[in-house]
Length: 302
Image (cartoon, rainbow, N blue to C red; front, side, top):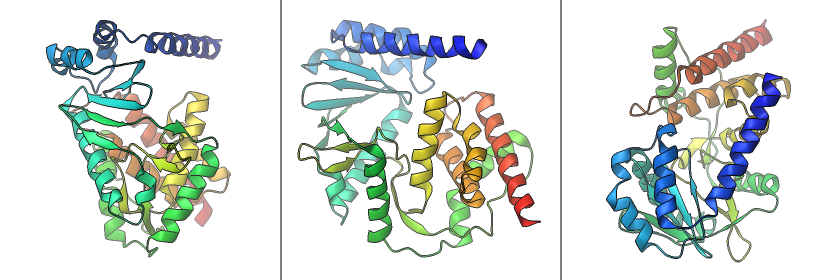
């Protein structure tokens, strides 16, 4: 009964957000940010004052808008999108995204950024893109291309430990227990998007698959993470639950336990930020998932 009510409330909230997002009046958008921004840990109200209102009045035309969970205001027009950061954390993420965009433009993976992205006065302006018609196929093609076009060598344990170091430290600090990256894991290197979801795989005007939200991109990333992230994100979104609650089920589907532990620690590290107070339940679920996965590893070795 409680679960049914929760799903109904989530559905009502989604409909209300979709209805309000189609309103394009700058003053309404400004008031909307103020009214709902208190629930977003990544928004800082000193970024939502007169300067934000000035941007909203200056950036025209606006056909719709969306406020992301990471503190970025998206303003849509017919052929473009303007991304406005509402905190220093959001600004840093957009800067990393632009940096990786330029890196890819100059690489052999440049066809994945065949769209315009330009910095403005406190915002970023990019072409409006279309969702991939078949995100599963698009993601598979991206992962195959990344693995084929970048050297695939076994990642040294110290390098893997460094990539997971923040997640390990955060989980140890929260749980008070010893957290370790699986030293027996056979992990290879590959170019990695880092946040490959169906919302970040798009198509340009020519129908070419392109990638957006590149702040976690890594030329020397962890092979296998992108595909796991895509599948876990779809599962957790469909079930309206934390991604950590889905991980043990993926072991039963044949996914390697060690790479799932690596994924958990890596994702925990990139999502944690000392400037944002995430709820304790987030870390509690992460630690529970770590223990479940670790127990499965131990059991499989007996």
